[in-house]
View 1 (tube, rainbow, N blue to C red):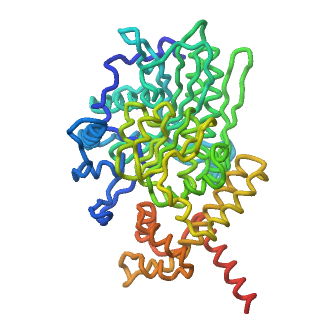
View 2: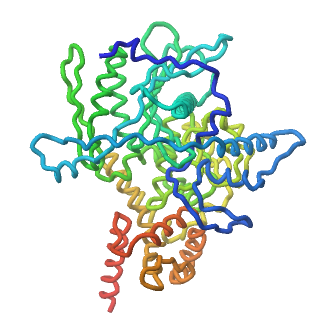
View 3: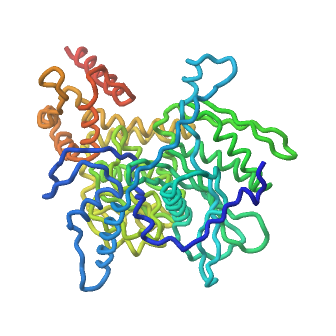
Length: 540
């Protein structure tokens, strides 16, 4: 077993500069290659990978306004330069070899094992500890990686450079406040998450827990960060509990636990994996990690969203998000920001936010708020003065001591959704207090918004047609929205079908082979259509 000193890797060098950001972007929950062009708002927008997304498109076409006469607008010039830097130095990532098939449990046949586990997936890619070290001037701190598991050996030069940039990005998101810290004697630990999206479109989730390290006297906090391709906040929060417990004994105790976790097969939705771990004076413990049955909700906790916003306020935020507007969330707590922004994105299911997505904006990247294209951003409240000079967006205050929830708004958010369907969502959300668990609440809330999409665009498959055998299917957009009887619903849908999220959804449907549709959205559509048929039959 490696000792503590052997496990510790000290990374030295210059503080993070803006240049290292050229190989990374921190954005979309989902990136897809797109080939066709569409016209929107008087300019052509390529349907290619959106990462730091649409703002790069403006930079490419030179449409970000720049004021050379002085004042805050100069930030746009810096922002434009930053977008350009993201396009440089792109390298193909060398993918890790697939891990071996999980062995499962003794006595299980192969079919049972495949049902219990997701083949070929590690729980995580990295665990790192980020510590704040004093700079030479003694007046500020620099976040540095002081522990990394696993270590990577035998990499090519460009791979090492890419890994170093990734690790620097991790330090930036673990301590988004920047370099100004003061030693503390008390610090309430907090858990939050962020998304790293590479230029090539690959996406990884960062899970972070910050706490005060062991010791006496005032000291700065440290952060534990797990990087994984898997989106499962609750599961990784439990893993952090185990890591924190071992850290209190010795840093060396973390290694064997994380090694066991890395070797364990990742469970399928609704299943559990057991990890055996030895702790001195406690003996061998069995840690059970269970995934929720609704895997598409396992990164979400709607309880946090509704503890910050009323039902009516959630509806207004949803209305702005569904039309892909610019939305900034403000809060003091990092955990609140990351949980709420992921919850809002989950309300859009089965559609996926396609634009800039940064759950916690580091201070060094605050100029992203000036991007003229859609985004979902989480900003700490101490930076509020740097975002309130924007217009044509929604700024939502999530903090407990807020004077008003919507600091800036366009004003039409209440009229975006069809009135009848708004009332139905309100009625469904009024039942929240009856939910006995987080899983029940997640199911109730997601069902309310899923039914909204079922009733507005659930008839889409009837308008995806193939003119000749063997040809790709096409979506008849005009006939689709003309078929809607309700005038208010038709007015909403006419706007919604212009969004990137709907466009990509339909593009994927067009490219699918003909056959029955799968998934919970299709299941709800069938249930709703059957219900309508029965109601028609009763009337006659």
